[in-house]
Image 1 (cartoon, rainbow, N blue to C red):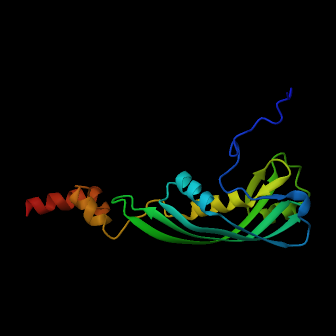
Image 2: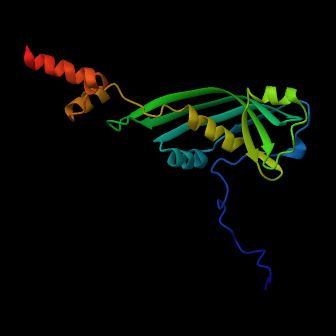
Image 3: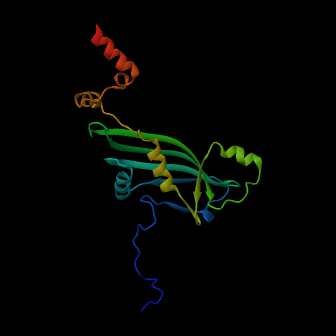
Length: 187
């Protein structure tokens, strides 16, 4: 019998994101290194559930990664093909994501920045804290994709569907729309 319980099974996804691609810090040097990540079918399905998508057909991240005095800098591109639901009709809508990214992974307990020049160069980068000895390019890719999504996707049929349901168009709903309606009644 194991007194410490070390061989007890822990759920595989206990505290791990669906698309986990850790890159150990000690393997990243000061020279740039190319790292590509791609979500498999199970990861894409889990991410689609998390982000409220019908489907993620493809999700890739291509990065150039290097260690700098400020942290681990990853620059590159996130590409994805997704299927979202129209907010009005629920119809599936295809969307293509192609985002340039510039990320700086910093230890969650950062030391003081070594120089002013580093602070200035960080302005162009999205800062991502990390804990432990690895950065997660999979989760960074998934979050980049999610931020690039259209928040309220609408199909070509959305306007007609909403009108039929009695929802006013933006120009009809505001104060000028009310005045126009009053004017029409007076004529």
